[in-house]
Length: 271
Image (cartoon, rainbow, N blue to C red; front, top):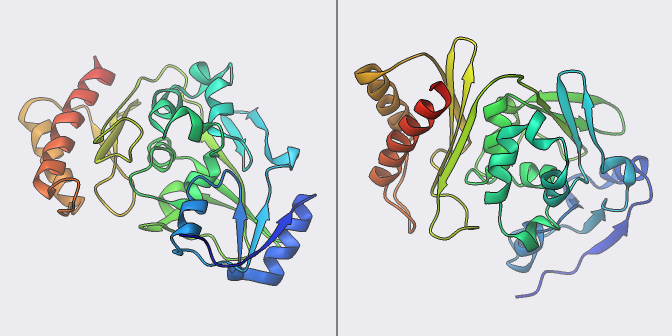
């Protein structure tokens, strides 16, 4: 299929993007990597009147350490972050998850913030943002705001970003000395996850985040648990996620994966 007709704007400055979004609102879409958006256009699931290309804006392609967080701009490609020399030392969970995002070819075009804007509940980057408790930094022509990860995702492929707002960047906290683990199950490597789990050791215990089951990636914090107490907590969490049957897997299979992978990852980060 071919997309419906649309106008194309190659943005020369961030201020231009914000002015156009203020004028066009929901009729405009921001084009960054385009790995998800172009497919939606071709299937006519998205029908914008205008595409605003931001990928030539150098100010949006920065990766910066600021205090106890790393700020990642809207134009940073997944491959760029994966190649960042400080990734393993500052954001090890991102380093574990990024190789599971699509394929080398899509990572060379796709952006970190574009994946978050798309808000597919099976995608790895939304899961990592929730697991780390990161923030999304939004900007319009009138205001700037920061939204915690758990408040940004509003449902399957839905976010709380307003039509006139640009995801300018995200910030991910740096946890010195913590331990992280990541695992996912998909039909093929590079496919969206049937279930993906991320775990991290916290000062009071452990956090487990799950994607691919509920409409949004979801995290739970527990004290240090073992034995039947951990089994009970994982079982309750698996049911709370509200898994459904689909063409890829049954709800029961997804719950089983949450329990099995969750136990393995928690054991890995707490050992």
